[in-house]
Structure formats: structure tokens, C-alpha cells
Length: 346
Ligand SMILES: [Zn+2]
Image 1 (cartoon, helix red, strand yellow):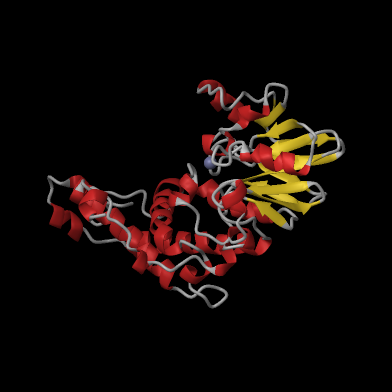
Image 2 (cartoon, helix red, strand yellow):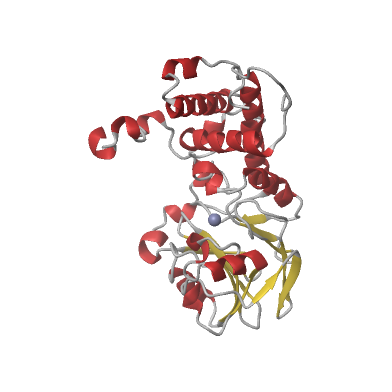
């Protein structure tokens, strides 16, 4: 594909990444199920993480279901898995799905929920229900039961602790903890072993999203269901992801504090304000990206060695986190008079 086909917009569009510039995914994000023909044959991989608690994945999206003895609880219904999630459930039990928990309202994680039929109870946060009521979607039936802060879903003695700690990836995104299985579900915060998808997994509140890494670590769990990508997570994965996003956050603070020049505005000219803005913000994000990817991390490796896709995705996270620092967090020098020629960013 010529670059012109990839980017007919030219200077107005995004450049194309060259595979030669980016490392292959490290072995720790390529588990055995990717190589044993399962995905080609069935379209999914299902794995029992603890007694009756099953993880389902297609190596892009994942979800979970739990056998209770009184029916199955499904957690999420990603359309990318679609009815392969039903197939996974049918592979391990004849019991019907009686309960569905929505992690959050995003279609890419619950957009296949109508496949569970009309007789299931659907549990979510209040905000998730409000959002789905505002933008109705027959593929995402309205929750039948909601909660605001904490709730326990008890089905046949299997207890799921549901908790809302405020907006992070999106409003209404909840933590779903099963102490008896030692499995925590927290979607679109961490992608175990990976740098997450663009812009912190397209999160709406980067500050809440960064905090959510600490909130995950407050739980006592062995396995984390995270929604993406190739595997479920461990505490070590969350600790690594936390270090990575805090590196980006720290570099963002530093780079913004160091910003004093207006050369790019002079270069763009007074009548090309957004040419300056594009260059200046991209320059700052590039500097944050450079510092993040060239530093040595806590285990002696670079992030490009530790997290799959870090060389592609870090610049997008840097852009979003830097912008959240500028917009969410206070800093020096708010009160001043006189020319502000050197302080356009702040
Ligand atoms: Zn989401």
C-alpha cells in the first residue's frame, strides 16, 4: 500500500507506522492457546481460573462467567466474542445464564448482551443504566438492578462484590471482585503485559484512570480480568502498568514545567494559531514519549521490552496524560499580571 493510499490526506492526516520500527510482541503476552489451533477452530479460548470461574478470550477481547449451582453469572458480553461466549459457557455447563453483570456501558464490552435473552437479571451501576436509558440500544438491554456505591450479588452462595469508586475509564465503570475465587474484574484500566490501546484505552478521565491502578492493587486477588488483550493479569502486571503510567505522568509534569519557549508560535505565525498548537502539543508529547521509552525501568528493562506495543502507543498516552495534567491538576503561577508570552501552555 502506497503511503498515498494509506494517507490521502497528506499533511492533514496521520503518518503510517513502519513495522521495522517496532519490536514484535514479547513471549509473555503470547500464551499457548494462540498456537494450539483453538482460536482457528472455535474462535475462543475458555479457561477455568478457579472453581467455577471461567475466563473467555479471543486474544483481543475477554470476559468471564461463573457457575454457581443455581445458574451462571456472565460478566460482560463483548460483541467481538459474540455468541462464542455462549458457546464457551455451553462447553462447560448445561446450566442457564441467570445473571449478567455489566462492567460499564461501552458497546464494545456489553454490545452482545441481548444474546442472553429476556429472562436474565442484569446488574450495573446507576450511571450505566442512566446512559443506556439516554441512548437506548436493543442489543444492550437495560439493567434490572443497579447500585450506587457498593453491592453484593449473591447467586447460590457465590458472592460478587461490586464497587464504584468514581469515574475512571468512563462514568459508571465498576470493580467486580470474587473473594472466594480470588479473581478481580476491572475493565479497560490495565491490559496485562501490554501498553493499553490508544489514549489510555480511550478513557474519559485520565486522572481517575491512573488512580484506578492503585484501587486495583487494594484488592487481594490472584487473577485480573481486564477486557483486553491476550491474557488475564496478575498483581505484577498491575504493578508494572502502574509504574508505566506514573512514568508518563511524571514526565508530563516535568515537560510542561520546562516549557517556556514560543519559537513554534513565531514559526507558525500569528495567523496560524492551530499550526502552532499542533506542533507544540505534539512536540511536548514526543518529549514525554522519548523520556518514557528511553529510561531504564525498575526491573532494568526498557518499556519497549516489558510492555507489548509500547513503542506504538506511548505517544498517545503521553498526549492524553499530559493534557489531563494541564486540565485536571493545579500548578504554580495561576495568579499573575502582565505579558504571558512565555506561558501559553499553562
Ligand atoms: Zn470501555
